[in-house]
Length: 258
View 1 (cartoon, rainbow, N blue to C red):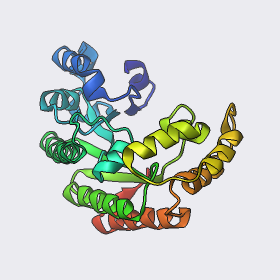
View 2: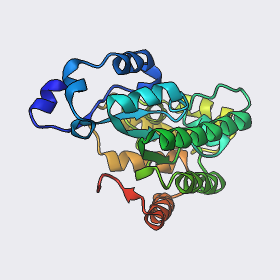
View 3: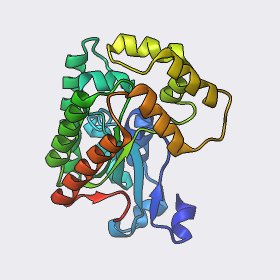
């Protein structure tokens, strides 16, 4: 960090995953014993640090306070919000076996994260994903409503938002669904949500199995066609634009155009 600052960089991304959860002890220790060169810098001359966090990690007020003291002024937060079944489909860490209770707990975690960010002067860059295995119109509408509610509640601390369609990246559970028709069927049955036929799933799996390089937009199209048969890419794009429009109304920047 010192080398980067001495080279003239004053806006630094710390790319370790989920800092308040994974590295809580490190954050506390760094705040408790900062190096002499850091202590010697006036607060307004210290570099701004940007990191990643989950909303439930930001519930840890002591850790968040320590991170702000270190210099973390902005945290990118992948927002866990939406319908209970959507949170299940996205493999979110539901600590309660009752999906509805788990979704309620996550909503409370989001509220506390906003409160703690407000209290300690940490700005949030919020990330939202639209789409998941078996998503239908009712779930999409519920997710839009939840995302907009979060944006409204945090309009004073959310400085930017990324809202994108789900992209099945290699290594992800969603890419596994593309390549394994049976895995997709198991999940859809567990969720009670409809997906495309076995034959359709197999034809898509044959295109992506053992493939490392592929067209991402084509993969998104295939994922929607096979695993969200009640929706279209145009409908999801319209939902994305609806949330982005709400960001504009609230004065929240889209993407990194700060």
